[in-house]
Length: 265
Image (cartoon, rainbow, N blue to C red; front, side):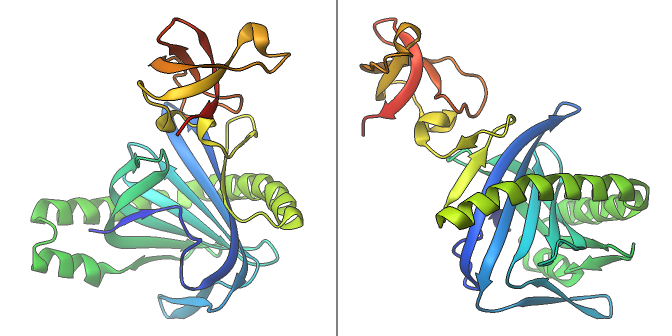
């Protein structure tokens, strides 16, 4: 079973790309949303959908991937170079979770569902699901679960059409603002974007990089104006959220409390 995530930079088809990752919450579900702008590709990606050949990757295309934690699907919205939605591509998943870096990924269940802008719905890779069952990579129960989830997605898509379009447009507008800055600055790396639109691109801003026993430098509340740093060993992590643009708040072994500014390797 394949593990998939948001990383596209090392894909052999890609010469140059920019990725942003945001986190949001809706009805008690955390959603991680990644936008990738493919500035330059060396090979288009064309897939067979129904009886059509569909180009989903070319120069200046954008993919928006949405991974809801605790759910059994991941959505990739394929958008062409002028901002037209090509399709929504649903991966049926066994598990959506955060890896050791705090980045979203999922265990792929082979079968996929596509929903194009005209409203046509298709299943893809059903043969891969069957092959996985025959080879023993998955059980009959998991096979049945994947088919059930794919059929559920197919049934619910028409009633969510307007919402899907609205969500795609919203995230495209947000990510485009950041991509314009990255292209101008020639910056090629994955940045995170928190719920307030702040860029998260340092380890001290991400909770999963901070662990008790680690030596760090923090800024105490009283020293925020001067920037004076206090060094010590992390005793407790006080920030509950996965990221914070001013640094993860910790308590040091001596009782000092502040936000991490530097990690001493």
